[in-house]
Image (cartoon, rainbow, N blue to C red; front, side, top):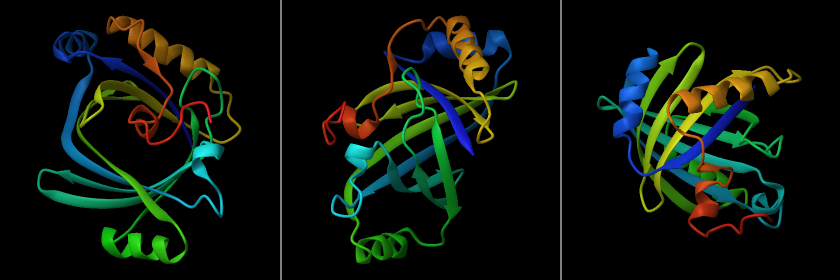
Length: 184
């Protein structure tokens, strides 16, 4: 699966929430997410290859889910579009220990409060990322091999409807925190 995604940094969400309502986006859920990122520079340095491996623990309405995610390198120069493979895991701690025993080391933990909206076939999230800032992400899934240019055009049209025409950010939260060097 390909995740076609664009994110933008914003000061706050007040005006955006009003505009989401005006365009007919539906609030789907609020949740807390904690992402533990891993790397193994000796095997394959994700900082250099622009890939990511993480364990995400999500808590929604008191219910916990844990997902192991691999993200491939970004596929274009304007978005965060990339291959994404996910699998549910039972225990974050044990999955982390498996990765560590394979030579991966935890790099950083990213924590965020996320509010998700649905608009047509798009997912729009408002993310308060601890120690980083506020971000709006708009994404849609595409099939591998599918031309995603039209999807990107639609995403930017939605941003315009929300009054966001600048602040677009391709760097990962690890790069924004200075953990990884942007442009590596």
